Each structure stands twice: as structure tokens, then as C-alpha cells.
Image: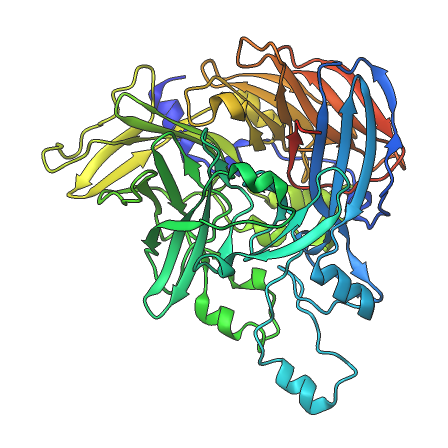
Length: 554
């Protein structure tokens, strides 16, 4: 492809570059309330499950979408449901439980929605008198502990997490709900992401935020490794958690929404993107009868700003790295290379899609209505940004500072203390026919924060993922698993015990379908060839979920 053609392609939005859909089927059965399966049940094995896999594949996501006559508005609002596929000597057993969060328990007791969620505002108690109901509109709702996004680990314990200041500790074997943990009881933060990073010494890093008289800050959190005696305690322990850096928001009244962050061996990068939260509206949203998602807006008049922080000292770089407005939820990997920080992430050109995932939209009928919704959505594509780490007063202006071999990303110093980045597309045109990709995963234990070659992701030829992809970032070649009517979860890589190469292992994904009741299966792919090894069929319905992890402790 010529440089001119490449520039023309890049000037099109990610949505414009992907083909339009026609004749998409309804996804309504995939966003329907299901029953839990607390006692493990056997699965039917087809093909071969490698006997060396011993552990549990844990998944999280919404599983209940109404209480009594009250119905949730947004997909993110559904009550958290935890799933466990226990794999041992070629056999698989399945179990699931709803998280017994305060939100779930209170809603269940009242048989109506009494706790506000991301896209659903709880109505005042009809049993109160009219004056009390009126006053309740002026109270800011408590943050939810409906932790439906991910499983995370701190000091060896498993928690389920969302994007508020609350997490719930859980038992990864029984899926029993344990105590609620409030981040603000340990450190001065108001929220934390559901996508922490782990270093090789056992410490956990995360991003939170804080706001007060001094303004709005994005905070980098470090939780130390577990102590030897920690295994003897059956209680949450975030003692020793600290804020290692506070980053002042570029626009104090309109801070950015973020879902995750970047970490390499020596640096953390916070991506301040132009999805903005209106703090004044946040204070008024209860009075105005608006849910939280209504205070978010895509404002592409703002650049994307990359804040570079030394992970060991907590010192923020005085250099600001800027790029064209873009939207990102998930990073793929980041590593340092000869004085540069290479960051790979899934990016789109339109950040309005988060609010679009209402249950009404997801339950549209097959055909024209579903096509119209899908074709309006942003497509995320993998990009590579490269930050030069040695920019100073002597660095020349307006020339490309990136000298890495075979790298098309650029970085130019535009004025003192500021560098402008232009990304490299981390794919070729073949990816476009699969609708772009999201939910990226790598061989995390061995290759996170290090140079790597492969990542695994979901292709989005429908509103929900309809393919599994393996990307070679050196050649930009794809391997694909895709079958009509089958919708895979985020792929999770599990390394084989005698692994030599990066992709020696299996990829796990839960496959669901709207076409047939109780036809779920856990798919096992050979990570190298991306061909099916086997599947474990389980006669239950599982709604479309969010994230998961493999617990090798079983």
C-alpha cells in the first residue's frame, strides 16, 4: 500500500473502514435473566481436553435484569453472576452463583430496584410519604457494589470488581460472596478500575480517582505482595495500599472516563481520553432524574493525553504526550525498547458507544433494526503508539523521534515539554471484515510488559463478539475461529507446563448462542494453530458476559 493510500485509509473512521452489516440476528436471548447453578454439574466432553489443564476458568457478567416489575435500562446494570468451569484431568464441571452484593440483597428483599446502577436510576420508595419521596431526589445515591466486570487479585485473594470504590471478596472454589471492601477505607480514592496490573514481585497496581477542594486527580494505586502469614487469614487485606502518584486532570471540571491503563517494566501510562464526565451534572443528576451514563459525553475537541509516570518513584514526566482524539477501553501490552515505550491498545474514533448498550438496543429484532444499531457503533482496531523516553530541552522540534526498526508510529516534539504522537495500525485490511476487535489477551504471566508477538481477541461482526482472533503483531497476520450463530467470550490464554514458545498452550472461551436453549460450551483451542481441541458442553443458559481469568490453583 502506498503512503498516500495509507494516509487516506487512516483519515477514515474505524467504523467507515469496516463493512456494513446486513441481516443480523437478534441477541435478545443473550441478555435475559437466568437461574444460578450453585452445585457443580458435569459437562459432556467432545473432542479432547488436555489433561495438563488443572484449574478453574472464572467468568463474570450481568445475569439478572429485573426485580419485580422494575427493569434495568442498561446492559451494565444487570446483577453480577459468577461462573466457574473447573477443569481437572480432562473433565469439566460447571457452577454459577449470583454475587450476594448489598445491591442484590436489597433489591431482592424489596422485590424492586432500590439501588441505582450505571444506566438505571432507582425510584423513591413508594411506601414513603410524598414529602419524604420529594427529599430523596436531592440525595446523591450510594455507589453500587454490583461488581459485575471482572475477577481481580490482591495479596493472593480473589475479588470481583466494577468501577466504584466497592469490591467483594469471593471464594474462587465455591463462588461464595464474602465481605465488601471499600477502597476509601484504605486510601484516599473514590473509585478504582476492574483492570489492575500485576508485577513479577506480586504487587498489584491500579488506577483510581479523587476529587476535592484541590481539584480532580487520577491516582495510581499500589497494593504490596502478600505476606507469608497472609494465607492463614480469611479476611480482606489491603493494608499497605498506597497512592504512588496523583495526576491532575487536564480539564478539572471535565475529567475523563477510563476503564484501564498501561504498565511496562518501569512505567505506568494513564490515557486521558476525550470521554468526559460533567462533574456539575453529576451533582445534579439525581435531581434531574438522570442515570450516571447520561453525564458522559464524547468531546473530540480535546486531544488524547498520555501521562507518563515512573512506576518505582511515582514521579510524573514533565513531558506531555498528545495524540488525536480516540477512545480506548482495553490495552493489549506495553514494553520498553531502546529508549522508547511501545504501547499497543484497542482504539476507536468515537467514544459515544458506551451509553448505547441499553437493553432495548441489544434486544432489537433481527434484520433492519439490529443492522441499524450495529452499523452506528464504533469499531475498535489495534494501534501502536510509541513514546520517546529521553525528551529534553536539546531534543529538536518537528522531526520524528522514533527510530525503532520497522516501526511506522511517529512522535514529534511540537514545543517545549510536549510531544505529538501518530499511531501505527497494528493490523492489515483482513481484520476489517471481522468488524475490528476487542477484549484482547496475551500470555500475561510471561510476556506482560515485555516484547511479545501474539495476542488473542474477539472479532465484532455483530454487536456482541462473533469470532475469536489470534493476531501476530510482527506480521499482522490473523488466525480465526468463527461459526454462524456462535458468540464467544473474551479468550483467555493458559500456558502449557512445558511451554517453550510464547503460544504454547490453549485458549479458553465460553461459547453461547441465541438460536437454541441451553447450548453453552467451553471451547478449548490450540493456541498455536488456533484449531479446536475439544469442548465441554453444559446444559445451561449463560448471558453474554464481560471478563474472566484462569485460576491455576483450581
